Amino acid sequence: MNLKNITGFILLAILGLAWFSLLIPKDLFPDPDALYHATMAKLTWEHGFVDELTWLDLTTLGEHFADQHYLLHLFQSPFIAWLGIQTGSRFTSVIFALIAVLGIAYIFYKLKLKPFWLWSILLMFTQPFCSRLVQGKASPLAILIWLIFSGSVIWQLMNQNNQDKKYLSQKKISLMIIFISGLVFSLTHGGWILLIITSLLLILGSIIFNTSFNKEKIFLSIKLSPWSSFLAVTGGVLTGVFLHPDRKDLFDFLWIQVIQIGLKTPANLHMGMEWSSATLTDAIGIFSVFGLILLLSIVGMVFAQKKPLPKNLMLPIISWGFVCASLLALSIKSVRFAEYLQPALALWVAMLAQFVDWKNLMKSFQFGQGKYSKYYFSSLIIFCLFIILLNNSYGAYTSLRNAEIFKDDQYTTAMKAINQKAQKGDRVFHASWDEFPVLFSQNQNLKYISGLDPTFLYEASTTLSDDYESLVFNATSSTQADAWSLIHDRMNAKFIMLDTNRWKDLHKLIESDSRYEKLLEIDGEAAYQIIEK
Image 1 (tube, one colour):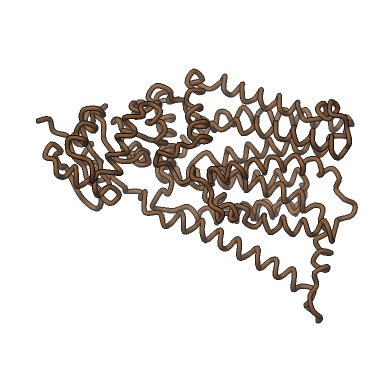
Image 2: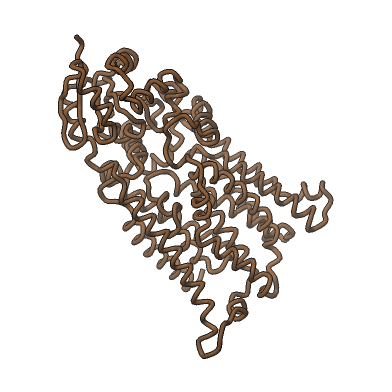
């Protein structure tokens, strides 16, 4: 790597550090899951591996919990111990986001997709990719590992016909990287099935390309496909699963997390917005700047092809197209998958862009006469790219900063009132699953109702889940007897913590019943103790 490229990485690191530090809110957590991860990191530091989520014993997590983000919590733990849950979470969010962006740039550099720094900068300011990176979750590490694996397979596809000793030696290193990627991913994030599916899609693309474009016989096309990569990543994943400290519960947990939540996405539950289907506007927005560059690349391949053509990119372009198409379908079903689709598009468009002689393309669309006429079209394109990125970055900034919940001091006053009265193991009733991480971060000695996702409660008991949602969302049609039967008799709660701004009707119902002794009510939060009479 020469001085020019090193300088590029340094400048990219400075830009990334500044942008992510600006982007991340300083006084709230737009996604409360960050507090769950930080609390788990704290517990991991203090007690070692956490193999039970006894705090949510009413859900399936009470019996079948496995820390699918084990390495994330392990990496976070020293920073959480040093800086505390909230500051530590923000610090690691910035660091992991920066590592992801630099890692993606390095992948593009190794694949010789010029200019390597440009694609990371475009991603850095693309929404929702950039906002997902700083939400204190496993996304930046998972996306980076997935791209390391994918980049290694693409490199093999680019060199499919190369049989010299140097390549064969490098291929062994590539397979080792793929194996390690599978292992590390399975210990960092529960979505490791994505690696295996990606590998199979690349194999499918390879078979179709060799059969259709190279006119190879089907059996030879199958033989030429990257099966060694599939075996390496599958072996890595299985090794990671075997090494997982709580492998006995891992598949039960992931069945709900990946299949029931990620793919089936129950429509009758009030889930997080990230699992909602994409609208037409969402689908168009996901393409962002890469949609414009894609159109320009297609035009350039017609009017301004680079000579000589980089023929080694044809196979990976076709194969990676299947991956992009599959991620697009998943993103339309659940917007959550856009965090993978956008870097996948960046990689696909970067490969296509290598076929275009961009200087000639700009000259081909020269308008008017005069000294500066040759710059009109390129200036227009740069202006459009700037406007799209500005809109994306502003959207990311405002979506993170304008969230009404959850503030750093959210529910702290109410929880202090409860903590003064509660005994270890007492249950606190709260009205929504997304409030659990906030309460959990403040007290790890109490039990709660629902958390991480409402599906975990639904899978444990559909009737309890349905009655819980009915009470919360239809409190005006519920009676005191309905609330008491659920909160006291069936959930065995000793205390209630209510967000009085979010759940006004439920607050009125609880307030009207003398069996709930008010401990405190202030600034949109209230605490009650359940009194036996």
